[in-house]
Length: 84
Image (cartoon, rainbow, N blue to C red):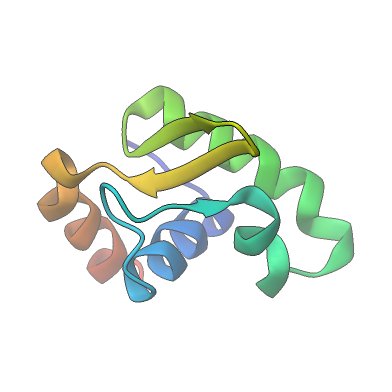
C-alpha cells in the first residue's frame, strides 16, 4: 500500500497518543499538528485510511470519532517504521 506523508503522519500521531480500538479522537484533534493549508488534504488522507481499513470510524452522538484498527496494529507499526 502506497501512503503519502500526511497519511503516515496521521498514523504516527494516532499511534503515539494511543488512539487504538476503543480509545478514539475527533478529526479536528488529528488535524491540529498540520498547517492550515494542509488540513483539506488530511481529511482526504483519513478517508483513504478508513477505506484501507487502517483507521476505524466510530459514529457517536457528538460526531464521528476515529481510532486505529487494533487488528492491523503490526502493519501500522511497520508503515510508521518504514517512513521514519
